[in-house]
Image 1 (cartoon, rainbow, N blue to C red):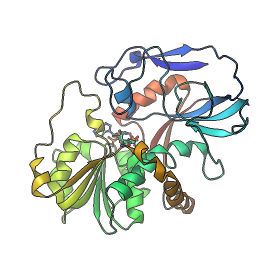
Image 2 (image 1 turned 180 degrees about the vertical axis):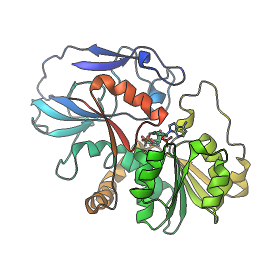
Image 3 (image 1 turned 90 degrees about the horizontal axis):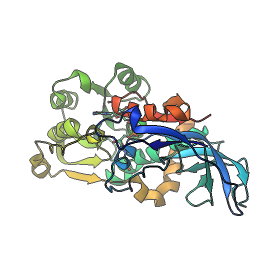
Length: 331
Ligand code: NDP
């Protein structure tokens, strides 16, 4: 079975030489086990944190072991009652062709509801992150004004549409003309900022939100967070979902220079990790499934073909290559 390991721990932006493709022998499955052939894998910004040696909120990847991450596969051989051959399952052993399991942490997905890879995106971890951040963390009120960074990405694109479904005014930022066009035409946002084409993010945001913003959904950190604090209304909320702009930093980064305004404006800033909210997964699916069926929430995928291209797809997240959910098809 082909798999991808770390060849070395990246310093700064990862390069292809940090990864290597290896082959592992597959031993036969035992009673109570099943074998899965991966069809899709997810690449996610948080994986960058696991490539560092130190512990974060998830343990680091081990050298000499295949990387891990969300994946969708088909059970191709089974000696397990609950996971017969033919089931399509969601697991956490991506970055490889095949994996064996006893079923722990593995769920069967319903291919009738949506294409199976959607369980890695809009109906999966990134969609749920958007939903948890808006509804459980920000406790979003109808009519609020939101600013969303990395707005055309997997999480951001769902945030924008869920907020529109709640009659909010949404301002999104992204770094490419193609993404700006998507946000306007398909994402339904009210205003967009191409942050790569402005010297004054806070000034542009203030112009687009003359009455201020009530919620900032932070995927980026850094200059975007600073701009959001600047334009935030009193008692507003910063939902701290991620800070991709600093994931490759080799030195500790500056806090927003205007952090005192969090005090002056009584801003609530709250970080969250979606896996702490798994008890709400049913509620999420119940809320999201009708929205995708009705077309109120649409989603995009950027698909890279072939396991051996997964490192390239991962690095692309930091160059803004993807529109919507970045996936790798393993066939
Ligand atoms: P995306 O699909 O949004 O892909 C990453 C995007 O980030 C890129 O396409 C790029 O878009 C943007 N980006 C990359 N580098 C920078 C930079 N230096 N400055 C500004 N924008 C940048 O990824 P996800 O939707 O999977 O993740 C989005 C965020 O959510 C990440 O911060 C991630 O860590 C976080 N996250 C948090 C979770 C949680 O539980 N808290 C769970 C899942 C994700 P652009 O063209 O707009 O620059």
